[in-house]
Amino acid sequence: MESPDWTSDTVDPDQPSAARMYDYYLGGSHNFASDRELARRVLEVFPDGQLIAQANRAFLHRGVRYLHSKGIRQFLDLGSGIPTAGNVHEIVPDATVVYVDLDPVAVAHSEAILADVDRAGIVEADIRRAANTLEHPVTRALLDFSQPIGLLMVAVLHFVQSDEEARAVATSFRDALPAGSALVLGHGSLDDQPEKAKRLMEIYRESANPSRPRSRDAIEGLLDGWSLAEPGLAWVVSWRPDWPDEADADPSWCGNYGAVGWKA
Ligand SMILES: C[S@@+](CC[C@H](N)C(=O)[O-])C[C@H]1O[C@@H](n2cnc3c(N)ncnc32)[C@H](O)[C@@H]1O
Image (cartoon, rainbow, N blue to C red):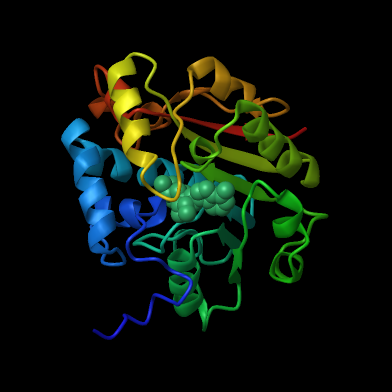
């Protein structure tokens, strides 16, 4: 069978990836049978999994719009994933955006949709080696490090296994940005559902990107050096919802905390 044009020789279709499983949750078509099979096992444990992915994406959108309303005009989106409806450069078309991901399908599809877009680019890099992103020619050509930058780390740091390494990633990128920059952080947390957390980790261990939800305290530790905007660290569905009157009585169903912070 002929391979679709969004794949490449470096992609193993039998090895599920977090990027393609997320694409499946969001109703995308850039995923293989192995991704769908593993994603369906996740959905057996989390029947709201597709709503969770949508809630996560909606939080990212609200965070980006908020930063834009405060004057941020350039964004560094770490673990940007397979392009989907409402990519950052589409939400804020006058801003400059650098997307970063290590998944070859996410990179190939991003390259395809950005081919005619001057103000956005994609870097193929592992964020655990921050210098590879920060010194990449695409990053240097598009972002002006003398001006504030909006750093997006949404649903990506829970793919960095050790707490120490996750903190090192957060610190390296924070330190590289000028004063006035801002962070949108989203991170999985299943403190009150330990059995489900265990099953989720077991399932994702079969993918190329094992996942590791963290406690609220550990996530707070990733926000060191950022002064948090109201309401601080909150479940993503409770972070400045578009329709506050419809706020959930128990927002913990979304399993992801979010926060936006400013660098002094
Ligand atoms: C769940 S998706 C989130 C996509 C997007 N940030 C969002 O919130 O809608 C996680 C993405 O992070 C990427 N990722 C995981 N670990 C990474 C790493 N060490 N470096 C770069 N990207 C990574 C995956 O390939 C995937 O595309």
